[in-house]
Length: 178
Image 1 (cartoon, rainbow, N blue to C red):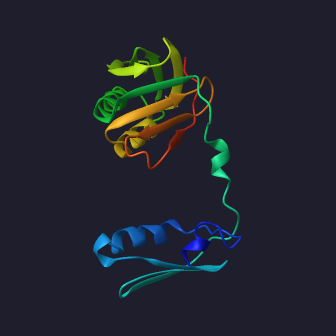
Image 2 (tube, rainbow, N blue to C red):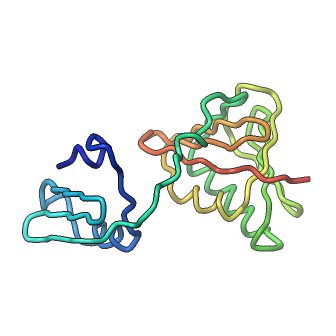
């Protein structure tokens, strides 16, 4: 019944995090295809001898597609290893857990906090652009990216980050930095 996962049956479901975690820990590629059966109150995953049954979460999931930016004034490309090193340096220089990081593009990418500045080699479309992000979220994002990273930024709007796999878009909401 995979059609229901794509909304073909006219409804979608919210699956609890612990169920998704149990799936990730239990199912391997060697086990073959996973059958997914949905109702409006339950979901069942079956793969080989393994069956996981869970209640779904009541309510409507927010339309996340609405917050993914479609147009940007700036696109920058860098390597994930360089991006990760810069974010790590920003975290080490952080004076608090909520340390804001200013991401500026000027040919290269410059990340700065109140106490440190790091330059990352990269290619930018515009000469100068600045956006602030929460350092904690940048650090979490850096762990998930690999290969070439594309940052799409718009002044005052969320940033969209995609790696060379291109399978997932990561949206970070901006924050005000001085």
